[in-house]
View 1 (tube, helix red, strand yellow):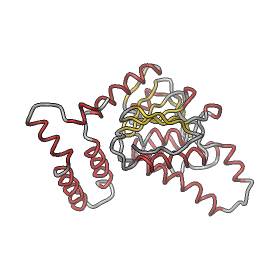
View 2 (cartoon, rainbow, N blue to C red; view 1 turned 120 degrees about the horizontal axis):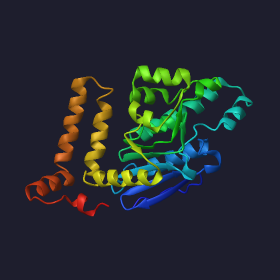
View 3 (tube, rainbow, N blue to C red; view 1 turned 30 degrees about the vertical axis):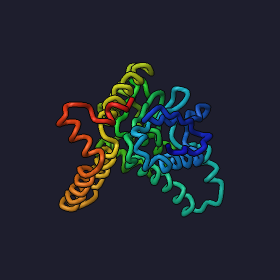
Amino acid sequence: MTTLPTTTALTLEREESVLRIWLNRPEARNALTAEVTGELAAVLDAVRDDRTIRTLVLRGKGGVFCAGGDIKGFKSGMQGSGDAREIARGNRSFGDLMIKINEQPQVVVMLVEGGAVGGGLGLSCVGDVTIVEKETRFQLSETSLGIPPAQIAPFVVERVGLTQARRLMLTGVRFKGEEAVRLGIGHFLADGAEDMERICKDVLGQIANCAPGANAITKAIVFEATRRPRADALDFAAEGFASCMLSDEGREGVSAFVEKRKARWAVTAE
């Protein structure tokens, strides 16, 4: 079993094949700091190759998902060296984390409640499954602070489309859960925290029917399809298919189908 890193800004809870990751700065509405992002990256790296962990569930303590970047930290940076290259490097590091979450081999489920502002909205956009509580407040507030939503912009565009992304970023409009689902940021709309957990339980049950290795390869195929020429993407997919067919999972899945029983992973998963 994977040894999880020690964390302070995050709380980790392992439940069978599910790892729950809590943003644990409720006093700051779970605003993102270098400590938060560094710990999150370390957790993702630690579990990346562990197929006994099928699902990562990200949620914020205190009934709030994430209020975006820590504005106090921004102010400190402005009062520091004033080196544009240093500021750019710090900003770019969050983009690396977004890529990591987006392409993590495990299924990533976001439970979004209370508020998802700036980077919090960006995080909502990189969940494989995002469950939104209907009263959650969303906003891309960066331009109202005189800065761009730099590292989250590509992920928001990918999620909601160019025309809606432009509207959300250039107006800083506030909206709630129902519109977030309509825009495609979220997949499910929950009526309160209890309902959000109910939906999450259903989703976890669905994920448990899928082979973890096949899910990991499928995610890789999906992303390669967005950046390779079509023929190259299909070559990559064919290689992934062959690898899965010859794996223990593939053999077990075919045997289970022929024998009209559940596959081993579906039986043992919660």
